[in-house]
Image (cartoon, rainbow over all chains, first blue to last red; front, side, top):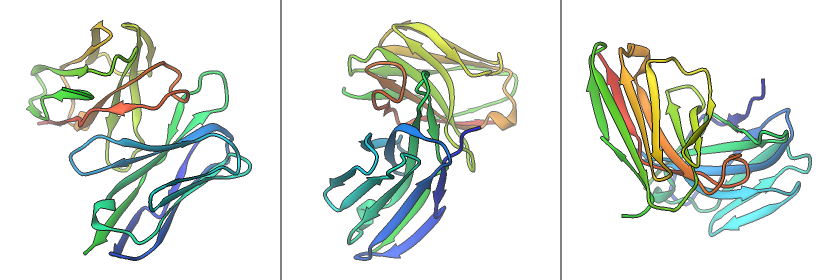
Length: 112
Length: 115
């Protein structure tokens, strides 16, 4: 059974701090997606990473895909209250069915 | 309206009730999905429809019955549910199936409580 482990599970920080959350697996993925889910809403795609070692930036968010395509990280610089939410990673199965394997998420609270 | 719209937002039902969840997408996508989101569990894929044909049923109990009359609309009919079915039910759409190939666009979900 493929698993995606996200850490930490919960994170509460002050506005302006930096943070990194992780998404790890023993399986290889063809691509990996990061979503953010705010309270009362559905997940919204932030980024898709495809190539091993790839780094993508979205304003203050930096996403990295591991060289072996088994893990990924999300770094947020100078966090703001608007970054509060559940961050979910989902890996696409490297096999033919391309199914998405979901992590449990990191729940981030940024306090003003 | 744009995006993916789900109704109702909240639903409380008894175990003997019959109710339906509705989803509509305005994105021109060809694939639609039902997911279940429960505390302390990863998102669980329930059903996948591609061009209104069901392509995947992930061993979902028969008390959940999906219906996809066209590529823009998706329903989830519920009957004789159990309390453990209480969860957030999310509808999603994508341009193509094979969810690793194109991103999912989610609705805001229906929070279901079974009493």
